[in-house]
Amino acid sequence: MTTGHRPRGLSAVAQHAGVSVSLASRVLNGDSTLRVRDETRERVVAAARELHYVPHGAARALRLSRAGAIGLVVHDVSNPIHAGIIRGAQEAASAAGQVLLLAEAPELAANNAVLDQLLGDGRIDGLLWQGSGFDFDDALSTRAAERLPTLLVNSRPRAGLPAVRLADEDAAGVAVDHLVALGHRDIGYLGGRAGSDLSDRRQSGWRTALQRHGLPVRRKWIVEQDWNSEAGHAAMSKLISGTQRPTAVFVANVVVSVGALAAAREAGVRVPEDLSVIGLHDAWFVAHGSPPLTTVRLPLQAMGRRAVELVLSGAKAEPGGHLLSDPPPELVVRRSTASPG
Image (cartoon, rainbow, N blue to C red):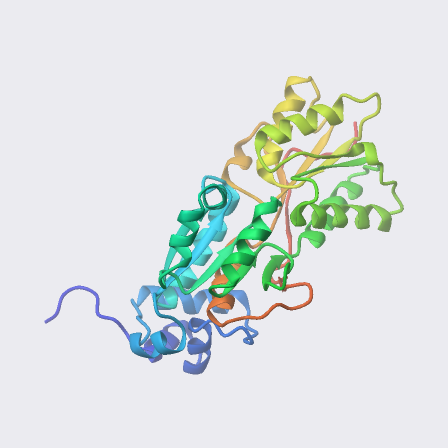
């Protein structure tokens, strides 16, 4: 009689997940050409984790890697939005017999020696870079790509680098459609860092949706600051200080929304009676805010998994990037939106 966990073979993983052996192999090997439903992919990954499946080390070392590690660079490891990306990347890395190494972009930008240490001597087999619109994001990710496979996360391709992104434009459209259905005609936009790919895409989706409904795009109701709650507070303060203000606002993410809601509360602007607020992405804490925040949920965890699969398979840059549109954006209605007062 043996004790502990004994690694199981690929056929056991496939049987446990209810798929063919070839499909399980393609999922766990990060085949970028594979088209499969996210729930099926998740079932295979979960089965591999539950059965403690370990890919054949020698074969994978020859075909995929030398170090057995993938790097993930984000701008703030404490950001709750990044948690979903990190979790998904960790799942996919584990399923592929890799470990995930986490680093913060500002630290790498401030210390070239640390970046060289991360990239050098075969420490990692590939790098995922989640940028935030800073100049050094392009410079450092391009530098990394000269030495090992590098993929941009939640971005369109830049500087010839491959990228994976979510349907941010569609998500902004879902938010505007919800507000219009409630009767709003004056809808503002609070973005992140001006000129960043993320804020541009979300603003583009907001603009397109307003135009589709025949509603005006007012420049004075577009305020872009940064991706933190302090910036959200400053942006909302500026928006509601004007002589005319919108009856509703779409906020580029939930972290920015926290500061925006606080600024409205401090100014005596009631949400949703005076101003409806809807944010992009979802997080556990916004369901318990004052008021609970209406959001549009996007599959961050699935994007983290897909990013690892793409970088391990050596994916190349495609026009527009690798778009993850399944599952589509999901509206989560809470108490921060209502018909205009």
